[in-house]
Image (cartoon, rainbow, N blue to C red; front, top):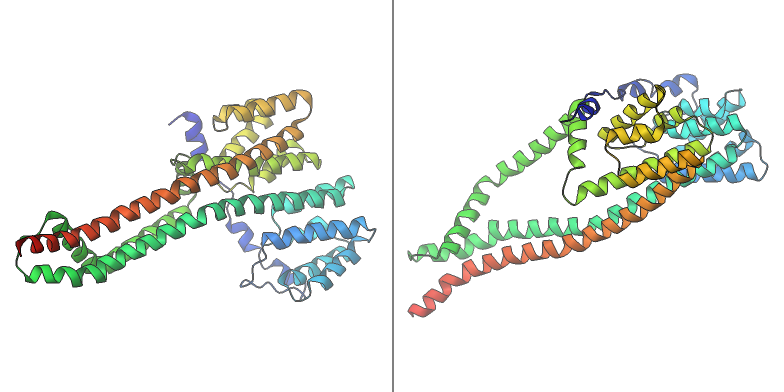
Length: 382
């Protein structure tokens, strides 16, 4: 492991518990808003909120009436209560960004910081549209990956269930006839009988061990060190590793580019963009980059030192920085990797589908062969 990787693995991430400690702060401020932990507000709803608020502001409506109009539009949705509380706070003189900051469980630092930048520069309407664009792109990209991988995963689950059913219920009833005949059985049949007996005897134990393994991984993922190691391992997975990296780069580049367009300084933009990265190893790399920039390094040189990002990303950033078009370069990177992620997801689907069918065919064919071989031998004797 290199010194850089050791540094990235060892960096501490901000504690997620601080936000949780303040989740109920809105309750003490006003009685209007009551958080409903059972009804989560989706990214899609936040995207719609940003776009509709931008449309109302573009129509010339003042901020507080625009927020009130959205409350009326949303009616009984969970977001309506939040917006009513935000509108009251803004009406009392609080800035929109500070009012949104009172709900950290709903509005991310990205959302809050972009609104703050828009208010500071007088371009709130434009910033809200850019924010909606970020959220829409994120949903669209994640949706394409999920759709592309959903079918192979469903096929794998069905295939596994079919094999378990055959080995647990169908095979024992058939092979019992062969066992009662006290004849020498072919090795495929003996292997099938042993596998069926093992699965039927230890099925519950296997399920418990699998559940325990998932629980152990989930528990380890809650610790900073284990989460960084696991996320680093994800990037080295065959087939999936490059897809995960491209997905994170696309998300990071688009967010950082739009934050810079909105007027945020590079260090603040990196800190905010870090929050959208779901891989903690890459998030630590961003912290490393931010630290180098704060010491006087340029962004292209700092990113190059992480040895994490592909060369084309480094060249585009270096060129954009030299020409003063860094924001456009970052958006171009995001667009490029959006397309590559979509293509990679489709390629994975085209590989996994026939592979699963092939494995399923081999397993079922072996089961059929193991059952038919004794029957053929009996017919030859007769």
